[in-house]
Structure formats: structure tokens, C-alpha cells
Length: 321
Image (cartoon, rainbow, N blue to C red; front, side, top):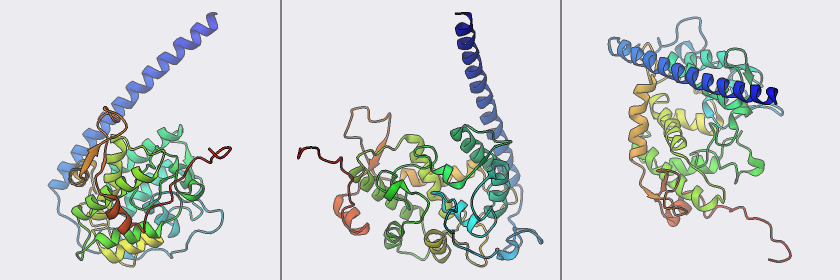
């Protein structure tokens, strides 16, 4: 009996300690990020070709050779990380990558801020129940459903609808659908909001296990914002990145500030995208999922862009019922 009580108390104390440490860590990251915003405001942007220093991978837009993934290589739902592995910036097999190396390599390649590059791998480590400082991951680990991967992704079919739940490969039909709505010579916030709405409506209609929390909606819009803030909305660069998960020759991040793309600056674009998505309340509940809303795009619009009605998964019938 004493051991049971002791174990219960220990778990409670550890839970409270973890919560306090997490809150302090997030607070520290936000203060750090705001400091970097100030430093960027007081700094000049770097010139084209000088963002990555001489002697470093990607200097002048010269990237290591692109090699598509082979059998047994690990890939995930994120084109940015897959492209890094395809170029050998991360291990080409996508396996046993330290979270700390993911931090360093992502900052060096895409010029996200140090605060951003610390927070995201730290969050990944938490989702996977691993140590940020000593742990490693395979890229496929990131695709755990409703961790970082989520329903209604712009360029991946939902786990429930994808063959074998595979999130490792580009989905050309969804990329095709996206570029059908882009009318200008650059991808815009309006383009991303419109296609997000279409994907949310399509996913909600076709996925019998559809979920999209407020957190994942904002995470989805963060992924969208990367197409503008890092890739510059450049269509040739985005086509290579989304269809092949490849960096084009000459690519450099569109964010040229010396301290990179901060979390605070990034959110200005994220919120503009999310605000542009027309939405209606959940039909399943008066409360929905505490504020969750979904794309309002009609069936005809989603079908026209996404190649007709998707193959909805159904529970197999039993005894003809």
C-alpha cells in the first residue's frame, strides 16, 4: 500500500514538474524570439548570394547532388525535411537524426531563426516522448497522426485515405490541384487560403475519421506560410520542392534577415492565411471541437480541382448489411 501511494505521489510531482519546466521553456523561447525580432529590425537584409557564408553547404545557391530516396529510406510528410535528406544535408537514408542536428541543419538551409529551429525539434521530441538533447528520430517518425502530421494537409492525402496510411511521398494530384488555382507569377496568401479551404472541405467530406483541432489548423497555415516566407512564392522553385522534394539550383531562403525568420514574424503571415479561409461550424456538434471550423468550398469546386470525388473509405459490410 505504501509503495502504491509513493508511486502515485511521485507521478503527480513529476507531472507538475514537467508542466512547470515546459511553461518556463516556452516563456524563454518567446522572450528569445522577441529579442531576435528586435535585432532583425535593426539589421540590414543580406544580399542575394551572401545569405549562406562561403565554405558552407548551399553557399551561392549551390546545393549537394539531389538523389531521390531509395528502398528502405525514411521520409515524412514534410517536403522541407525530405528535400534536405534528398540533397544529403540530412542523412540520405533519413534515419538516426539527432534532434540537435535537425535544429542546426534546418536553420542553415532555410534561414529560420534559432528560436524557431529550437522550438520545432523540441516539440517533435515531446510528441515522440524522447530527449531533445540526446534523442534521435527517423523522418517517418514525424508522420505520427495528429502529432505534427494532420488531416487536410495541402499536399498529402489524409492518413485515413492514403494507401497504407503512407505520408512519405508527394501526392502529385494534390500538387496539381494547388497550381490550378495559382493565377499569377507568384503564390500568394489568397492562393494558400483558397486551397486550404478546398482541402479542408474535401477532407471533411471524404474522411470518415476527419479531425482538425485549432492547433492543427494554425500548424497547417504555418506550413502554407513557408511557401511564401521561405520559398518566396516562386513557382519553379515550388514545383521542384513539392513534386520532387528538390531544391533548385540557386535557391536561397526568401527571408534574408541575419537572424532568420522568427516565430513572431512568421505568425503575421500564418494569421493572414487562416483569416482568409471561409469556414462553417462543425455539423457534428453544437460545440464542434471548441472553435474548430472547416472549409466552406462546395463539392463541385473541390471535385473540379481534385479530380472528382475521392474514394471514401468505408467499413466493410458484414452479412450483406
